[in-house]
Length: 279
Image (cartoon, rainbow, N blue to C red; front, side, top):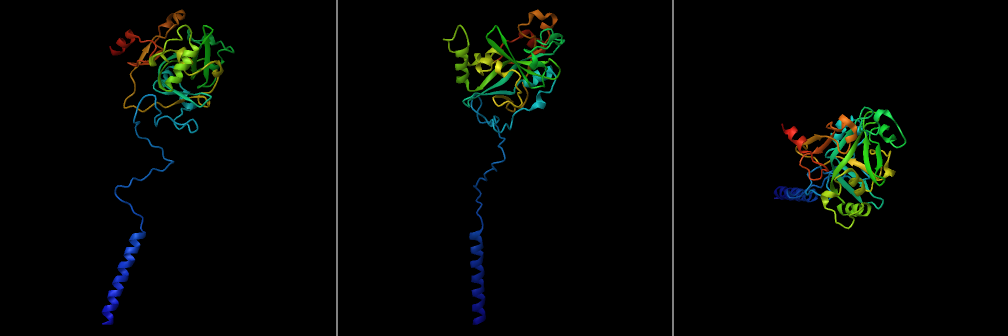
């Protein structure tokens, strides 16, 4: 029965071809996890908080989350508030990176502001950074030994003083720097909340000195600003009087200091201002 035998042979040949096609086809089992493209950053939430590096912190080579010049191009008051929650990064010469979240700032409005170093519109070699483009650092020395760091904003002579940080990364290095540079009580071990709770303290903890004056925070390789971790809701901001400017008359009472309410890292808490904000 040649016809029947030929038909069976044809069916067997077809079955073998199907089996070969199936064997050569790529396998995609249901449990396989497809690896993401290396060019696509993972944007999931961080698994831990605290001093460890999180997915929100970029490498200094990529600056994927670095804040650019446009961020600093705001009036001093709005910039002072916009700084809250952002992360200041300091890269030391040995490659160590120190990070702290900004929790307290002060705005200085320029020539009209009696507490500003630019009051009356005066420009000197010392305060030149205040008159440079937004994002320029203005670092000055107080008491002949301590430094304070400001960032210029919109408006000639206007800037924002950084007053306090929440330490995030490199705490032990910060502690060593503070112990080396501070006077009087160098033998006492500093608590975490003492590392950056003041404008001069944060400069010590991040090894910031006069050499940083007039640097561009949007372009510098040793210091920059990154977007802070995303939060469901923004921090509650307290507006209070600035600190240590009693000589400035009515300007000493204006609510131009801003801090994150409830943060243990703030340098000075103003209970009256907090009560007024609740009223």
